[in-house]
Image 1: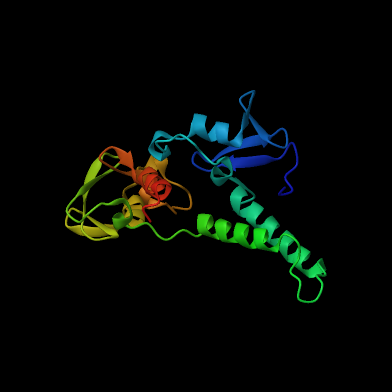
Image 2: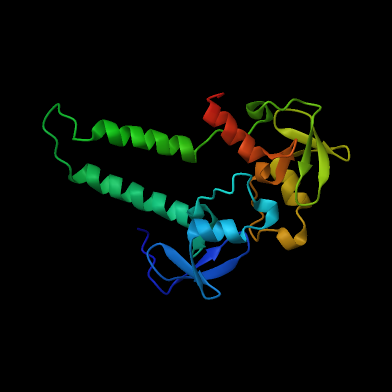
Length: 201
């Protein structure tokens, strides 16, 4: 779907580990074949694991510096653009499947462009505490987007960037902060997903 051939390599970003593409759905590492999701579930570093252990594999791999997920979106957008130019609907008539495509586009946008994380989304109030999983440090929530540690204020991503242990750092140093914090034993990303499933926001 994104033009990657068998024999090429993709990078498992959490470990910066290259693996070989061996089929249209599998990669090979250390003599064993895995789907992307299966590989992510088996080799995800502990500090990046999510409670559900359900991983969308393409989010954690990149090819020539680009996330597989982003590459797929580029291809889909390019295909949609070509399709819209080549379609010839009758006057005042919408192309077949128009509503479905429009809806799927909205769904995709909702999934890919979610609102930034806020503590109020998961019912966490100022004065409560979170645990920064990679080091076990406890921080205090002081607003809807900030925490306090040693009298200084940080966003979750900013704190992660500053205090992530060297052995776990990403080369890009671009972190999705909520992934690395827990509240009452639950990862913030998992808490948000629970609220979304419950239709709380």
